[in-house]
Amino acid sequence: MIVRAILVSLVAVGSVLGLAAPAPAAARAASGDVVVFSTEAQPLDVYRDPVGCQQLPTLAHVLTNQTDRPVRVYGNPFCLGPSVAVQPGYGTHVPGGAGSFSA
Image (tube, rainbow, N blue to C red):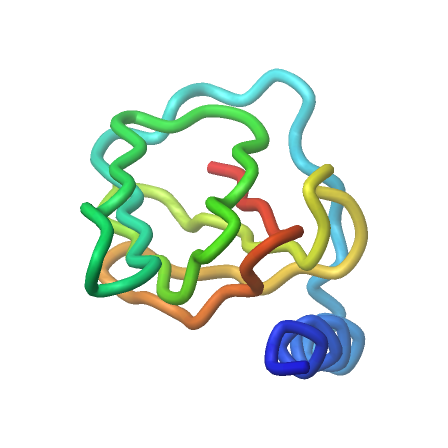
């Protein structure tokens, strides 16, 4: 139920702000790390110099962008449809189970 609420929130924010955009087809790698926190019982997932679409871990909870470029968070595993941009040095709550991000 919480995941559904997060997904609905992401879609609503993306629709209101007009941030819907597909992932770039041939993007250069972002320099730095995207770090995803899932639970206290798991180590952090670290994506070094990410490029393209990355599916979030099943229990993902918080994403932090420590790269030099904005990262887009999607409510589906395909990096399609509405998204929320996370600027460098910022973070956001993310949908677990079916979410993804692109850098």
